[in-house]
Length: 308
Length: 329
Image (tube, helix red, strand yellow):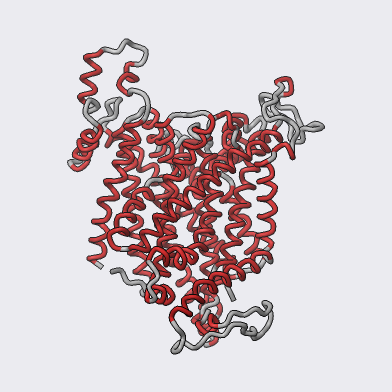
């Protein structure tokens, strides 16, 4: 077990380096000169521009820039944005919002997906099952941004039940609609996964044995079917946390959520290398660690699985 | 399927209780390994596919999705079959007019016929999805097969590369990349979107192919083929890949739908296909500012997009049901 975690942590290093290098290279290739852009309408002062280029290491070759950035990250210095704010401050401001949004979305998809999926799986072939499967497919097929706009117009503007946008007021109420929109597609996947898993476990020999020895339906369902069928669902949910945080860029744009997606989009438009890479790097780390935790969880939940 | 059943190739109908054996094979202890191999090479895949085909045509999901996809492909190939109105004929005096004769869905802000735009939007949206899926199957299939088959350092190296691309969210990476390339018109614009989506979409396919190849790598028939001296490359192509094909096909069909959505998302964000292609994503993006006053302008292309994605997801679902060995009874 210890060996396994150690090896997985070691494997994270090349993935981390590769992903950051890739993102850094992409930002390096972005068109436009950010220093010239800083002058706006004014005449570019060559001395000031050169001073700024040196300050942001923009006068050095690409790979040196990357290594200097890495050195900063290792020593806890994420660098400065072109507007003079420390990147760590931008990160510290954006991340809590996105984490809140992603966790709310995760709760929504877990509750609705699992409950509806279990009901559908226990009554497979029935009308509830068929309706749930068709609805879940529809949920996957409608793009997130269409869902976002329609809900925003219906619930926010027409019915005025929920705030239209989030803006500066980050509260559970204002994040409720974005969280639902963000959760949509994953909720459909959770529902289908739960349904298939429950349906499969229901036909297992040990379930028949449990029924045959006279256990009540309630005990069979809660003690035998659910405990076994929810293992893949739990692991899916764990891995989805990273996806939700990274996939929030569209949802955050529609509902004006001041989170990572928004900060990232602004930074991309301004070609701010260190900000983009820092934001993405943390997303990648969350994703990798969530996957490691999921694998460990899998082994903890299912004693048949051994980690070597 | 037990080993006893494999020994006889039944030709009886699906309902015959005891299949009449047509070909007899000697029992294990006297059979030549080459005979066993000759049998293994052809029989199990063909019976799997034949049975899957039989199960497929009985599923309403499959029939509905195939009909839908046929209509969509017709619109992709010959849009003029559905609408005689040219896609760029707009008349400002008809701005936001309701449906009229020959214009079943009415007009949008600039007086363009909505039905004609929706029909003509099928080509860019669907072709991006199909091309991306093709590239993903080729890249992901190749890398996954090599990693699973050769193991050791090849696997370690390829799996880490897969992890790197897997860890970057598709839409996010595509935004940065497409910003860097800049918007291009015509074919180059379409190609850059396809290339970027494939570049960040292949890891899933690679993982699925790898695990499928790993699963058959240690099976008896592969050992048998090795024992009679079939080369490793040939075993991979003839024995391992046909067995990996089922999960690959299912993944490809479902992800085709998600790539169409991803293209729409990118076009919506302004970094997708060139504006001149008028894909569904672009049409939705164009109509979003008027959702309150003229919702139908947004809803029709969105419905076409959703229906297309639904058709491909349903097809993938039906194929999965037919190919899943656990569901075979």
